Amino acid sequence: KVYPQSLRAQCAKLERLHIALGLLSVTSELIVVLWAAVAVNQLTERAYDPALSVWDLIHRDCDLAWSAVNSHYILGIIGFT
View 1 (cartoon, rainbow, N blue to C red):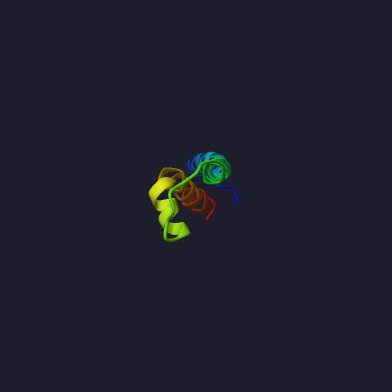
View 2: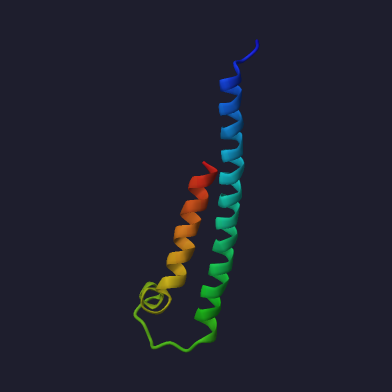
């Protein structure tokens, strides 16, 4: 079956979009690895005041790094689905 040119053009655009979305998803997952390494290094290299739990420590002192890890992880997973 021969498909019309308009349908072929639309499929080509969707294919390019799929490639771009895949690259953005992989990049987001690589950023997750980077930010997780930074956050773990912050936890192991600095001295912190005692906290009641690990969650309190992360929330109090490392919230930005863990927020970046969580948001990029979710964006990467959404891009893969």
